[in-house]
Image (cartoon, rainbow, N blue to C red; front, top):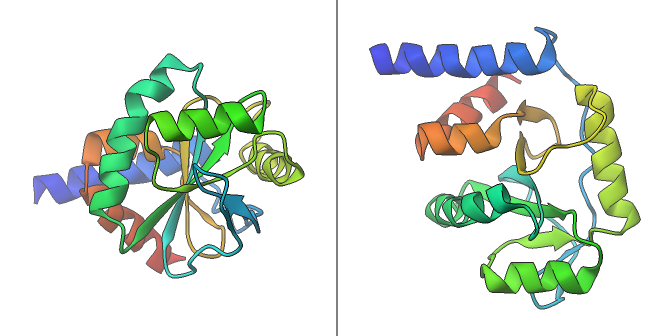
Amino acid sequence: MIRIVSLFLFLHTSLLCTFGGVHNQQRIHLPEKSYDGYGKVKDKIEEKKIIGLYFSASWCSTCRKFTPKLIDFRNQNLINFEVILIGAERNKDAQLKYMQKFKMPWYAVDSQSQENQKVRHSLRKMLKLEFVPLPSLIILDKDGKILSATGKRDVVELGNNAISAWKELAKQG
């Protein structure tokens, strides 16, 4: 019982801190096209899944430490969860090398593309940020509504229980 109450308070406090206590009904612009670590294009994200927008780059040491944990988390929760890398590399080749080095199983948006800029812009506007810090994992429902702006912390502190918490937040809509 204490664990459930702690989980609720943790998530509730995270959302209040992130959004200033305001229920956010806006949607993040989801990328229409993405590619895998070998450049293969994927047109559509599965709509049944919770989506984690992963803001990361190879030159970020904290990102390099978190990426293997996120890969394990994603692979254990693949039925309900998918990640899209929103890279911050200087070019697509650097991003592909980063994805290949870590064997990232998810798709990415080209770091220099208009799609990347649209996602970043809509997120900065919604969260009133000047920039998106690295690494960040923003959790969205299938329609692009933010469920958690603290996805990295959720994964590290809650482990696989984060999925249940995000699903519950999605139901509350």
